[in-house]
Length: 159
Image (cartoon, rainbow, N blue to C red; front, side, top):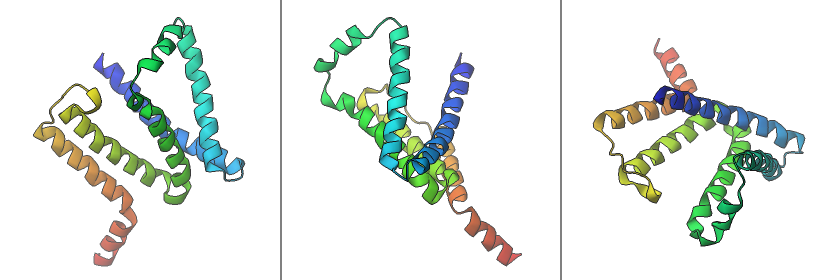
């Protein structure tokens, strides 16, 4: 079962890259209006999720529980909107590979902290030295991605 979950996670990561590219084109076609493009993306996603929620047996019970939720439970929507807006804003400015490398580094760093300390109510999953080493290797990969041109030029000068 883990393999299926891993494949779904990989597909979700791929979708984030494609979404950034699609939303960037949407913003371009909307006269460069990045917030409007992010809004349209979120609205289309909300409609799709609404249809999925309805197909699973209604949402009235779930909606009825909303007033009793602490305000911080709604931060996910704000964070998601900020993430979508940021990808639309930054992709044409810093490139898709650099954008996603930094997004992955941010996701990895924050997820390690969430797991290790059980932040925001998550189950504590202590970070082993091996997992920390893997994260360091991934972050090193981010730096190689970000500075690949400078690294290549440095090697060309040496050779």
